[in-house]
Length: 403
Image (cartoon, rainbow, N blue to C red; front, side):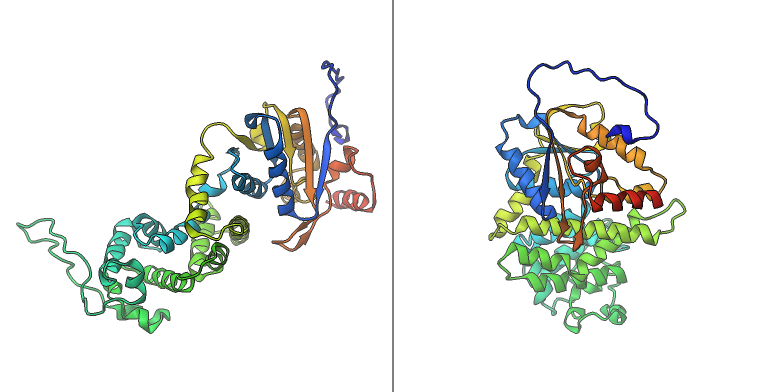
């Protein structure tokens, strides 16, 4: 199929291996996650050593699905050419929220979450955490839901210089009334922790959103329901806005709205992957252990290689899976519209399939239930002779001619 490129260097290839060759195999699935689950199962059942298996992808969203389903089966994997699904800040944030629900004494989880508010650093977040415990008689959740409002100053004294008497206490407690215009619930406005003098309006708003979210998920039993509520909450939306703004920031400090919206879409797609992962669990501790501790254990040492095509250059593996071979994803039409070309995408496809020494699987799915989107097979699968040319192929060629 590389012969379809207009500019090629003539080559004469000779077969030097004598054993019987296994032809490449095309795998077709009805839905995207069916594909990821099935490939994870094929790898699980394979006799090939894990460090001799590679899954190659064009887009990072493909890797998220594969990584998650491999972890679900307890298969170790190592990801190159992109951030691990479990290391992404949005997934860490979701798991930090879940952690607070299960272990309200986890100060670091609280600090990580409050730091998303403008003007709130780790020191202020720590003081708010301790204050919430104080007004909650040792319980963070009680400090949110049923605070002791008779404690007028829940913040610790800070004696840093006894001689000069500096910082004996806060010079002046703030008034919770300064947040009256934010539309916070009246019950929450009475919480003494809002008197922190360094608490910004953005910090108070985020704290209120966390209060509303924790109240909505407190007492729920199913991990799936909790993950769903976290992903659709105002609190998580604020985190998404913060992350996507940073990721879409240009050199001059302005934010590209189109890039920001694309970033938001990618983040919310990750939440759907976590939702898929949560489905088999009915216990909070087991789910969290699998997502946090399990993900750390499974990234150590050897394992299945998850590689972007660029990261796979120069490497070879006995067994290779090239996934998500749908038009739009591979070839990646979005990158083509930004100066790429079909020839370049075809070269990348050539690189990906030639990483396989013995066994090669190529796969695609017909539908994405998260985006509610239908797919057609990649043009490359027709060119490689794995699919017969039909109306879909003719439409792809016409599409390419127009572009």
